[in-house]
Image (cartoon, rainbow, N blue to C red; front, side, top):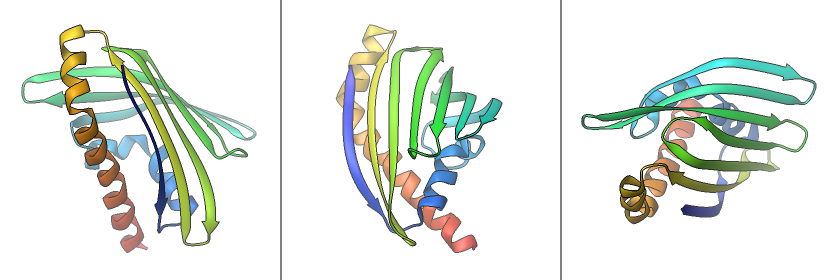
Length: 150
């Protein structure tokens, strides 16, 4: 199983980062290896937002879709993502957002990831740190892009 935990400061508003993370339909536009992304359902109940989304992940000719359940507690500023179907044996990632000031926030991100396919999982483990950095950088670049739109 691949695991990672990181705390990162972003020089962007908490609202921008929050919207970026929850805009799953746009993941296909900026996340590496994400060839399609689609929210299939979304429910709001007071301070809780629940989303079911499909992500198509691919490299070269290999592509697969996994479905995840995203639960956002707006009061706690915590997003929990769990895989509910697809090639992932385990996926749990947690985002905890903390406002530092109007233009800066801190994000604590943790992920536990394991593929059902043992061979692919071993390959993932070897490349996990590189892939993780690439994904984190893509979120930062997307935040910069969105900030420049305003």
